Each structure stands twice: as C-alpha cells, then as structure tokens.
Length: 65
Image (cartoon, rainbow, N blue to C red; front, side, top):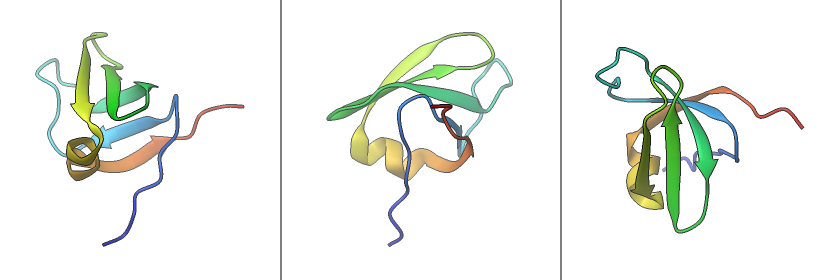
C-alpha cells in the first residue's frame, strides 16, 4: 500500500464531504491522533492516525513554509 504523505497545515480532501458542503480540511494537529478543521464552517474533528489515512483521498494544498 502506498504511504500517503501529509504535513501540518496541509489542506486535504476526504472521501466523504462534510455536511456543510465543503470537502477541504486543514490539518491543525498531528500526533497519535490528527485533528482536522473544515475550511467551510470551521468545525474540527479528531481522528486516530490510521483512520485518517484510510479516509483521506488526497492533499489539495501544501503548507506554506
């Protein structure tokens, strides 16, 4: 299986859209769990790292350094 590469502040697309209609999420915390924040409504969700990797589709935008 291909290991997905993502970093702090990257914007990712998940397999299912958020109920607000947006499908863009910003990674705001990384560790054993990953917290993501919806770019549309600002709602944040915390997921275990392995569950996040399964549900993530692709990286839309890389973080600016």
